[in-house]
Length: 496
Image 1 (spheres, rainbow, N blue to C red):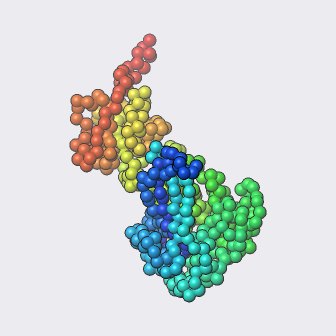
Image 2: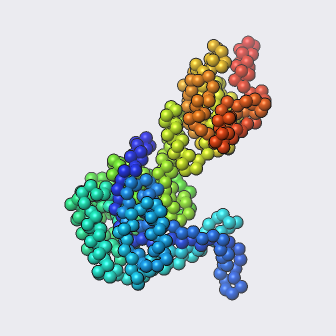
Image 3: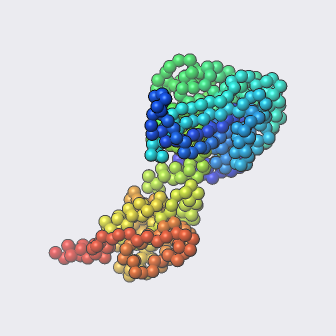
């Protein structure tokens, strides 16, 4: 499955997306909350940092940009204020086409300010959220202009997908939604919707896919049900009632349900350390919106969306999920199942993904013939020194050149599979050359590790690694442990 999903991700970067919905700005006010006010029993926040991020449909747009969408055209309504200017500037800096955004003099841009207390400047805890917005209908003439702009932009081949982020703030009305869906179906463009927390899903009738979370779905069906099976049954009835092709119900740690015309399928997600669920739905919608046009089946798209949403809840606030983060999460799962032995070409591609999200690459090499405790200590040292550990393994031919005709004891495939089973190792690559320098040039590690027996010796690849700011580290060694020593001990045992 992971290999197939990686192939889908490799096709990202060509999708054109039309996004319409409720745009807003998220502001964060961080401070130390170390005492109680003398005026009243409330915490006193001493501000140490301020931050702002795109929220609502803007968060979806930011995620689309982070996932390398080729074109993102956004349509919505903002005020004519500083918050709107900042929102538009942030989207423009991401290469997002904002010409479809309208601005109103007497309607403030929605802004959500989260007051966040810090413990020892690190642990974040939201204390309060302040919403600045006006929940009133958009004037008819302005809404008519927005509809005209959106509908005129929809044409065959103009966009691969249309995404709707509905917070029920007056932009997505039932008549507008129905006109949009009808025009999109005529142009054969799928419409994916993150629905509002409302009781009547009639406005979404005919949509290609909607993505309610558990609470939103229960509100729409009007009753409390427990268990994935019952939720799937109710979602299936809702899907049929409103002629929606697919419903993806997100179930937090339980993953997602894909409810289609003929079946209900469960896509589990792996356990996550949940920090904050803000923005998870935005990440899910963005991933689905790019995965389906990239050739993913609905179930494959849901698996990718689970990863995007899972990565989001591990972060604080609405933080765009990078394409390479998703790919590296898949690679982690592959490695857990022992998929670590790679050729040099594949290794270069995967290391590029790790490097782009800031992972530190560690390289070491050796024959690793008859693994022993000294080898394990070396590999543990490598893992403690960085994030991704690459082991260059001498081929049988290379070992014979360096050690003589009687070595190795174990062939290269046996040695590679033993290394693959060690948790400190992320990737293994076999090389034929007498020394690892050509491989080191391809890996370009941040850290090159050898044992402390090299303390007064030249380390192969050292000059190259240090030329771009990398460094060489020498791992402590246990005395008396080497493959030669192990072979000698075996001989002594057999001799006795």
